[in-house]
Length: 243
Length: 305
Image (cartoon, rainbow over all chains, first blue to last red):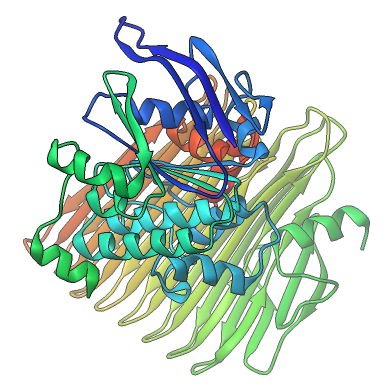
């Protein structure tokens, strides 16, 4: 369980992005964090992963204060983070990235499983470099595969739907649906996308750096969509996703 | 064979107590072992120190290893090796070099290799260079590679120098006839006050010839690297040269990819990029549980692999 207590974060030029945010994120739930651009979603996700350190407040993980632990230390505690814009590496292969994520000593069949969960064939991808020859959709899937390989107790996904094509998006929804059925830990997804919010156990609406609303997914969804705080997909896209 | 020689052989060749195919082991300027095969004959050169290696036409799937080791200081080894590869042969040639010195005296190996590829021949050429040992003695390796590719011949050259060599000047010159293909992959690591110069010159004389030269290097500490790659297109040909370098500390890297088009149907491309490791790459690997130092090591290892 992650507990955020009175978290505040301000940009170096004085913009207040998070203002006294307190939240409890329970185990084995899919929790979506949504809200308008600039509302503080990505900042909150990065604060959980240790990429940003809050100026005020504290973060507890299963009761232990992890506020001052850096990114590596939090990763070792079991927090995984999927970047909104996955990083490309010249030379590092998909295989080596997933091996690093798994902590080493991973079997060939496990490597294959992680890639098939994100809709990629290991034979085609394991020895490819994670470089500019991969499309945005492929990068996103590999990014998610690295998070799956972590077997983390808390996995944070920052706008997984950003910058991907419709086919990759359809696969992404299926991946999260499968994860939700067999949750190995807490899933925290920062998203605008109604199709992702639809599968969340809980939705947290952040606005102007504060928690504006929070509740069960079903209860919150209609309000959020009607207030324009979530993006819907068109009928054609729906057909692909459901297809 | 002493421990130093065995250690160098393991690092620069596929030696695991023995070689699979034909071989010649050169240690401190003398022959420490030789084995020809039915299709690959290794002979002493008559005009200079070194070897003549003849590979029969049609030889498939065989390999020849000619590692050279300098195991102590005060050695300046110069060797001329010529390879004649017969028509339609398809072979692997491994020509590593290791220099070791502990005494404070310099150790140098200068290997001049010429490859004559007959029509349709295919060669994979693997060249690994290392320097080992303590002390201030300068470890130098100055290879010269010349290749002449006849019609439809293919040379794939995989050359690396991963650590320990204080000074190197690497000269590579290739001439391609009609339909010939050249692929070069170079990997270089320099650190401390090491110095490395690489010069590639490829002349494409025949229509349909192609060259692809990619160099990846890492320059650390106060080391210096200079990369010059010249592709000359004299026919309807395609050429690509790329230099990618990671730089850190007070290292210096100069990169000059050059294209000389001498035919309107020559299609030539060059790329060069020099920069430090991106902060976001380190951050990504830290989110996977690596420390900053481990992340840097992984990125360099992957970049040079």
